[in-house]
Length: 217
Image (cartoon, rainbow, N blue to C red; front, side):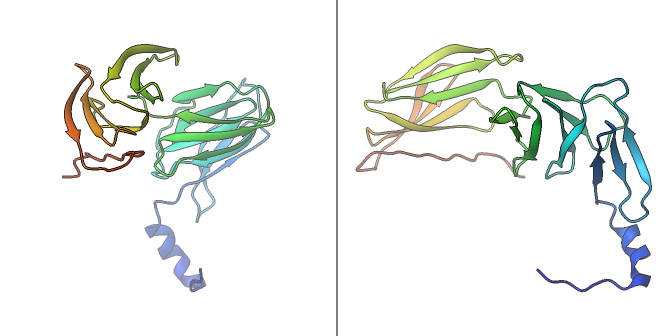
């Protein structure tokens, strides 16, 4: 992509207007620094005094709210607009140096790569409490996820006559839509575990489903 090179006298004006630029650096001195891009002034320093581990990689979330820092074997997530040196969450689990970090396009997950030869996906959504799994046994199982990521089976949804291929939660996680080889899609009320709507019409297996009931008003 091409653009016009700004003239020297236009830079101060751009500096005043471009207040949304987030520039951050990490260092082997263990510090994370936030900079004013045009002036070169350091506006904030996360010193990490007394903490072990150099900063290997950093990434800014698409909405510019969060900064993820790969620090040795862990990933620390900080608020960009805050002043606290303490991360809002720390993800641990890698057994080797974390050498890559990036955000999902919608900021829901952080993806990391490590010298332990694994790639991990970390969930940033604090309200995630349920997991749904589909199966060839014709059922959908609903699992609860505790804050320590322990998983417990809550209930099984029974009604499909053949393989269940796909499912999608409603925005409030009160409902689940499923697609099955029995040619049918079903809408389930999770509190009762019952089918509240059935969608008939496919002449072959219904293998995928998408749902977006977010109110944008």
